[in-house]
Image 1 (cartoon, helix red, strand yellow):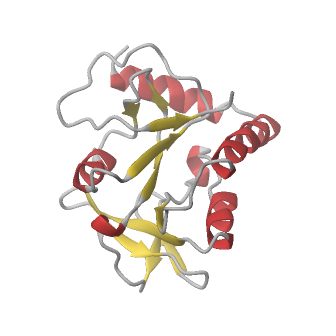
Image 2 (image 1 turned 45 degrees about the horizontal axis):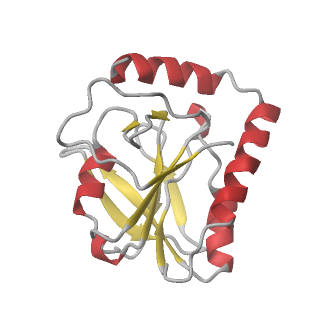
Length: 182
């Protein structure tokens, strides 16, 4: 299947998850994250969940990494050039929703891409080669292409990977790992 078909199908699948199904899937995902080696990780980039799209709740992941004394980094979207700007997400940070309902930091200290050690990437579905289907604007592919070569990239998803996304292109960035419920 091509990305547009997969995007439609997996948005629908994710939206039909019941709260108890979603909670069970999230617990499995969290456990896998909590078991990751993170000794050499200092700065963790996380996405802030969009509740209206039934995304994985990232608050337990944020709490886990803060407890491990890792710095959390989140992004703001620049819709003029479809890029992300990154900011430290301190405990007392204020958030506001952008025009698409994405929570973003307000008056936070800017972080540099080259300081990021680990990136958790949102997605709708991935394939066995760790390519992903997101919302279609390319924000994360542009961002990931600017990260250091040794920055670890981990996709989070409720669904098992499919065999192959048919229309990947040269600008798509495969992830190092995709975590989904086992």
